[in-house]
Length: 204
Image (cartoon, rainbow, N blue to C red; front, side, top):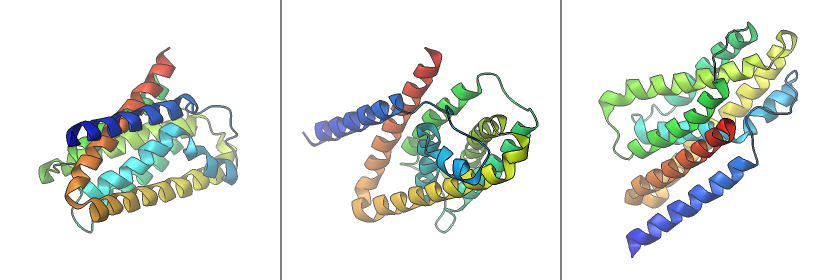
């Protein structure tokens, strides 16, 4: 009975995230040339889920006292790739890659239930790769003349979302104790479902 309740809660969370995904398409209909627009942009669902997930994963999978490695890696890769995006560098099916990065972070959260020290370098590499996709998408839609203000905005909001994820991860560890691994698994499953839904919207 207890396992059935956990499964039910996970399915409900996945359904809610998928519903939210239908209301938040990636990179649509907003300005990209001011600080304020940069501050607002990461609240698109694909970015928001990915950035919060980085914080949760960092607390759950990285060594004690090193949780900042994940957000720092994401931010550095994000701004570097965004700058390249303003220069015209792009990738085919970039939006699809951004959506799949949400699925990737969901899988990383599931695997973080049993963190393996030898896999941490791979994990940070995956964080950097996902950040690069998000950064290229940011840069591609930003006019060169407005990049500085817009970049400052989306970096500030990204850092805040990472912080929120870190706090959520610490809360899971503190308040759920041994059940935190199951919570991570459920969160990762829901995140993956939302990412698949976003990808499906783009592929339709």
